[in-house]
Image (tube, rainbow, N blue to C red; front, side):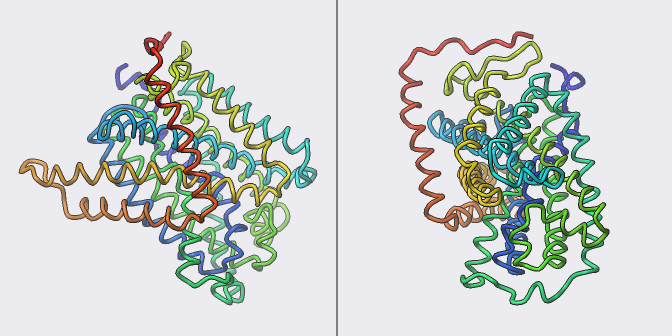
Length: 442
């Protein structure tokens, strides 16, 4: 496939990164962070700086190691099949748990228009699952169509969010930030806890790397999209959260199902409440679309290498891993059904912690891969890395480790249990005769 025939250009690829990040996180996280108070702003700052280091890391890896698959592809190239398989499994778990969280957030904001959705019941579950499977159908039409949806929805949500962030900063109530730390933890512990939560909003910084084979001029566009998309998101997240916290009293904010819509109502009136509620729905819709596109790509890459069942490698005439997307979305549906009796914000908080852990573990492995490559380059007279490249490689490792340490015992146990469950399947895959990877039927 020539560069001209590839479905994802630079701006579409950047919108995939930004759109996958600016989804449910920015719209519901202010409610999760309200229990910590103003100190959570520092959590945003730490996660933003760490995420930029990770984005730079993925940009460097995209230049060095070609092909789709993102974290799986880089890990397998450096450490072989077993580590590559574990990262593929962990990242796949991250993606389908992320899709469940985004779908829950979407329905939470949809309750602005349909109040009955605030009552957890069969109706809420049916609406959530309907959204999940509607986007599956869009993605089954092809990568190009999914990319168009992503570009449009990213533009629709980024501009209004910036307006609320900028205007809201002029109406802050300083009393809403007193005391600075509302939790029972020390300032450092509170910052660590909120950094773990806010990192969820940056998951997706590697989205351009995953479908790299579908991107025009991937050696240039993938690295640029990773860094630019992360920077755009950070410039929206931090002032936006400050504005919402400054407008809504902490105890009220903690109970809000739609914090940005509530903040808009305070600024502009009831019409803005519904407008921002609609924008939030579009935002979550776009993020869920982007992640549905990605959720089939990683297992497809692993299946082509004989490390996942060959059903994940099968592609339609449009080059879409249909069965992989359907299987993954079935797991999304099961996760929604398992948690539907909890309140929406409680569901969201638990699932984002689990999704964050299962993504940060692959991030850590990729950070080690990048560091080893930088060290090798430093011994070469032709490709010596800059000091900033070496520094950011170290920061990426330290940041990923710090996040994992602060995830909390329950989340870590769940995460490692999911990884441990993958090990027997690896040896089963290795022992069973592998069929020839499914050919592209196009």
